[in-house]
Length: 276
Figure (cartoon, rainbow, N blue to C red):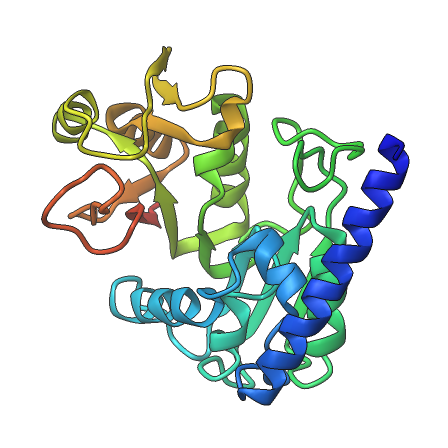
């Protein structure tokens, strides 16, 4: 059998598999109107944690970030609506949600399934290059200007975004976050942070996240594909925040990724406020 036939057969097998699993999801009551199909969940956020992670972070937005139902929210890297769906129950008609992502298929699903029911929720595809999700993208993250006016948002969040972005991209995004967030507005961002404790745990092999390849201010787990997972020096992150007029709200909530015994979530959570 030729390689092309193998690929075709594999594609057909996957379609059959997902059709069967979708049927099981519907029959078991797992699927709802605002629950994306398994083929998208597997590709973006895992098949089984779509609801649990969304609910987890809604709690953090409210309890740690002070998010109010009337505020305007920006979700950077909104994917297939994992954070948007629980927010539909929390934001009222005075509040609003904007999200953008490089995954065109995810934005189509969001726009078709969420926006018609919640017209204050908007989603945009941005044609940014991404090796995994948009390899033909025309724009680059280190030069990208967010498609929003200055001082547009009260609350901004990024979940599992900076953990896959290189330093010049992160710095540009922080600059854009500072531009589009209002003075007094807050941002909640998830990282892998390198500090004495996490470095010690990495060296002791206490974590499956083996950030063995050291670079200037950060480490990666895969030297040939650095965006697979990136951990940043905490001091560098604090410096970049300060440079962009963002003040870290202490304490940083450290995650379990490094093998810590005392943690809040999986990744480290940094909340900051724009002070100028």
